[in-house]
Image (cartoon, rainbow, N blue to C red):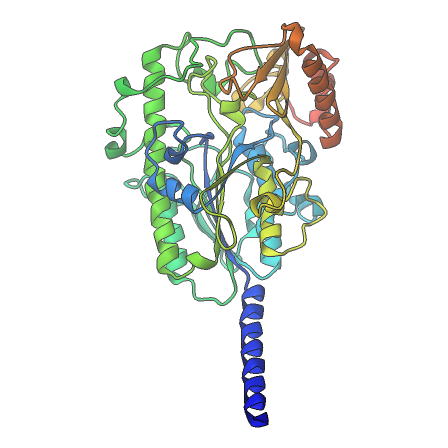
Length: 506
């Protein structure tokens, strides 16, 4: 009898030990990271969201396999090239007010600032923590960020926008440096970048985890998808958004910037139908290439231990409120998709917590167990993803102002477009303050009842206390984030001292 008890005890101990060893191994195994990033893809342009009638079977899979943030946004920009500060914030987890732009309002690292701790990027941080880091696609923040952050770069486009057939790209490794530029004129840009990502996955044989940063240039204009995708969306069958307008109802900052003059004023229904048709075609064409990357991840046997993040760098108006571009703070221009998939991330889940795109850096730290660097200024969304908390913030700031003299678009200081926007969202309500020359315009929307921002409630006395509360919240957020805007001054006081911006007129 005692011998049986002894054998049973030994068996129990063995099971416990082997079980614990298995669990410990799983705990210390770091997940891979695949970041999929599109250019100008606004919130809602995924078929599974039942918002825009666009075909995205592979993005739909990510929605079903992961957790989607339905109130995810960019903070804004200090330049018409919105994607540059957006990507700088994503990379650093810092608000754009606290990242020094260079002479052309691009948020790129000057060489002399190579060692500054507040310019730490998430690829650089994960690389320092044992990850092999890989990048392909659009890189809009200069080569220094890339050299510091990535172990390998294949088919990188260094710039803001380009043709989608014949995109000039470069390769980089620390050993060989940068290659000469090359191009594949017969291939759509999204295919070129997917080729690079698939090649990396097919040849990856290291034991340490990887971080892949796959940044497509689509659906940014010129919207020239391959013909088979254009044929999916006959322009005359496109349904116009309910907030379509021929022109914006009042003068705002940068309402005649490059993005806005791509089509004539006033906007016509036919023109906007064509713009949306071309936009959807670009998204579907890129979705196909995302599918290739996801298939390669699965065939490499890595999908079960990979965190997949999908997002876009900013939204786009395409006829909404009479606008075409993204140089504003309406929902269509600041809203972006944000999806997390992977181990221990709930599937087919949508959460309405307020989230910024540049929450990605601290959230990846939270999901992988890494300490969040002190330089990061945004929030870790992990408690929301795991269901431990419903939110990480109660309100959000949105900001846009045209760069003084905006050299990107040929204006001089004497004729600078000027103007700006500040907005706050708290609960169901959003207040926008627009400044243009000597005019301040206030708009108050109930986003729950009016997601298209059509019914301005600011003059309704019933909402007076809500307006005052939001103005107070906006001022607090401005101070908290280091935003230089002064709501009491003409054009927020942003152009009072142009010499502070360190550039020369053209």
